[in-house]
Amino acid sequence: MPEAFVSLRNATIAPGGHEVARDVTLEVTAGQILAILGPNGRGKTTLIKALVGALPLCAGNREGRGAVAYVPQGAGIGFDYKVREVVVMGRARHLGLFQSPRMADYEAAEAALAHVGMADLHDRRVTTLSGGERQLVMIARALAGECDLLILDEPASALDLKNQHKLFGILRTLAHNNGLGIAFSTHVPGHAFEAADRALLLYGQDRRVLGPVAEVLTEDALSALYDTPVRVLEQAAPEGTLRAAVAVAGSP
Image (tube, rainbow, N blue to C red):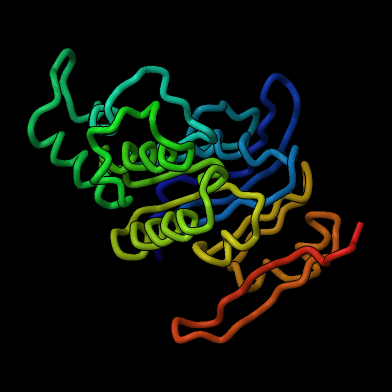
């Protein structure tokens, strides 16, 4: 059985006293990717923060092990640092108090940038990058910390189609080849088809569906989730069956 890096057991999540989810049980395991899907206001970001440990639970338990890296949605960078300097900040847990980054830390940062295809931009100022490029820099910073568990809140929201495809290829490699546990939230079912092993569909406070992507992301399930007719298209390819979900044109 894959090892669980983080798990929620019978968890109730109620930030500010507003109950968002009740009796949630799920885990993120080594070598697998979990996609969390749902329309606006269903608690995707809240659940992501509970997995990270940034939100206390009102009931139930959270158990975690290993190093966690979190990439929030639209993560901002407040100062005009160079890309390399931002990424090496991910090495903070490897440094002692008041210790400056060492050569090994900069090498880890360069390797992380190469992993996300940003090595050529290491000397650029982050303020000169596009939103999608800054998102890839933040993911590189998370990787530089040598995490076991990578949790991302809508990581593809600022990326064009090419960079979305690149991102999810990176995530697949990190999980399936490097053994990371990964969870990400998204509005787009196609992101789960492309990268995830399992999907969690958030219908509401008490209703959720969790299971393998091919079993959970059906036309009926997605139509109910997004309250609009959805069709799942399939195409045979050398790498396996490709799937995409589209809203039916002309539907309300």
